[in-house]
Length: 109
Image 1 (cartoon, rainbow, N blue to C red):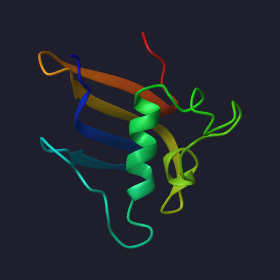
Image 2 (cartoon, rainbow, N blue to C red):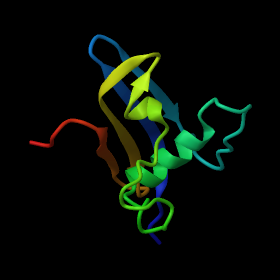
Image 3 (cartoon, helix red, strand yellow):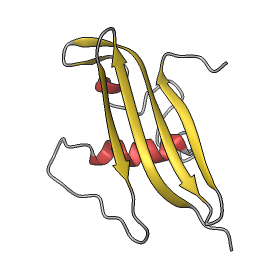
């Protein structure tokens, strides 16, 4: 039976002269996301949903809504975001795959 294994979630946010990001590894078995307010728990869950392309299919976000906090698409630390994206690394137990999705800016060539 095929299975979906989430290996890693990587966020990158770029401004004109700075690069911000997070690298969230997942380990085999059950992973529990916990912590105090405003540390990124919702951003992790949103990233997984968005990386899988499920944000609209699950009815979580309307077509004109950005599912991320403003730090991903408007500004971070008072600087305008020029580009942001995520990479979701998954596997099916046999092969590994990387899913790349822009949050803001950039074009796939």
